[in-house]
Length: 179
Image 1 (cartoon, one colour):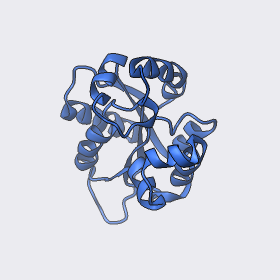
Image 2 (image 1 turned 60 degrees about the vertical axis):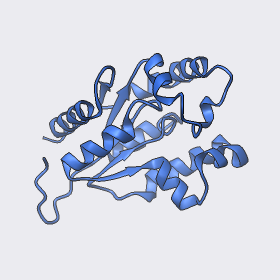
Image 3 (image 1 turned 45 degrees about the vertical axis):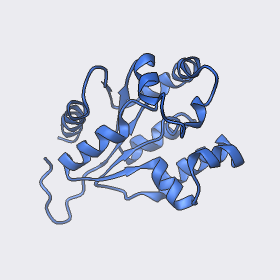
Image 4 (image 1 turned 90 degrees about the vertical axis):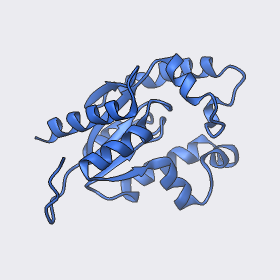
């Protein structure tokens, strides 16, 4: 989609949104179509820190993890030509949306509580959903986070869409934003 010429630098694209909205799955497809490098912030932090997100949360706390996320965005990824799938809580601390926007384009992927629950119900690696009532946890977290998610350059619904359809919309939105 983006013609790759030597030394052509395009702004990074940051996908934000709640867990289970398709940031990683659709992001991989979109990155391939855009000929950009795909990075997942959680995977990058795990590789750099040498511990799983779940273990970081359990032994060092959420504050430490948010610190690692900020550090990754500030200096842990290339400045251009990357599509970065951000952890669901990454854009929430004060100043993070502004930091992301200063470094590239930001798109929120959105889905309903029921869709998120369905997509995440079998995944034990999500520390914030390891509760007796995950639906209630999703509703509560989403209510707190939604105002930040809505500050993105664009919001794309992933409801009743397959991964490729969402990826195509991400590509179109990104290309419109840089033209």
